[in-house]
Length: 151
Image (cartoon, rainbow, N blue to C red; front, side):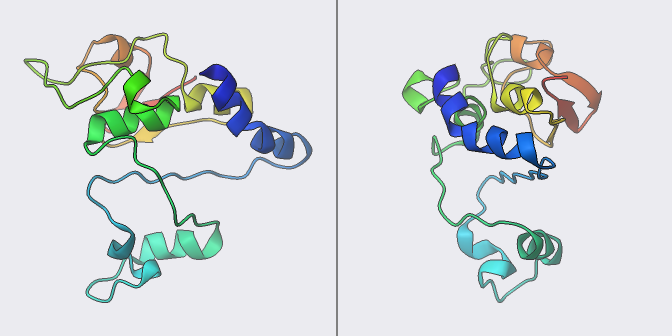
């Protein structure tokens, strides 16, 4: 899987070798559809901050979600693995809190971006393991709503 992720980001790494690294802001929101943002035509409410990001940067209008539920979608996004090969395949709750976790040694997009000189962070819901699980321990917690990978 490292080879596939490496291939995907070869152009990015090649680009960043000769120019300043572009900022990457990836917004993954549960239950947010293409038509839910005013920059894509939503008329009932405004999303001015996201609209500003879209106006100043690149936008992508096609995306494949790795699953119909949140935890496996996050796992697929971070690892580049198909749901059938990912570590998290459903929203199975582990008591007293959390969900199935990824192994702490999981190679993620954040690790790849770190090698290209980026500092990475995840803000909001982690959803890939309970507190003190292997995947929780692979991150450095810098606050209750931020996790920083690849540090």
